[in-house]
Amino acid sequence: MKGVAKASMHLRKRFMLLLGSAYRQLYRVPVAGDAAVRAMGKGIALLGRCSPYRMRDGASAGALKRDLERALKAMDIDFQELRESEGKLELVLARCPYGFDRPEHAGVCDAAMEQDRAMLRYVGASLTIEESIPEGATACRVFIYPSGLSER
Image 1 (cartoon, rainbow, N blue to C red):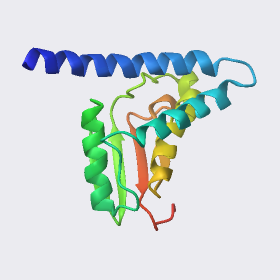
Image 2 (image 1 turned 30 degrees about the horizontal axis):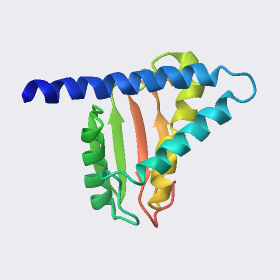
Image 3 (image 1 turned 120 degrees about the horizontal axis):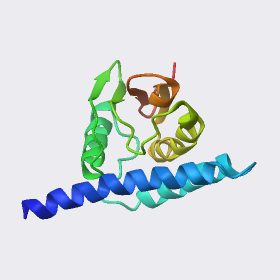
């Protein structure tokens, strides 16, 4: 059974990389690419509302952190750090699950993050990207603000 679990983890990582590749191709469409990637991300976020791994509406920072950890593990997304500080969450990823790792990926990265922004908006939270690998950082660092907290 361990082999099956390992294979499914590998498949989830490959799926994320394939989704990243699809986002990059779609982003290249003149004029409409950025909007198309953002719309696709919002659609995926809406589907995520039906998932057993969805986050709870209006959750506190601690509850949101637990929900997010569970979702990241279920999607097999490696994260370096997820910590709560001053009522907000800080998430650090050493590697982009979509494979966005070049400067020319900065725009598609921001557009693809619309999925995460939408997922969090559905539960009353918000997200800001502080640093990203495509923009030259060594890791992606995002802050998540639970319901009722404002971004800086």
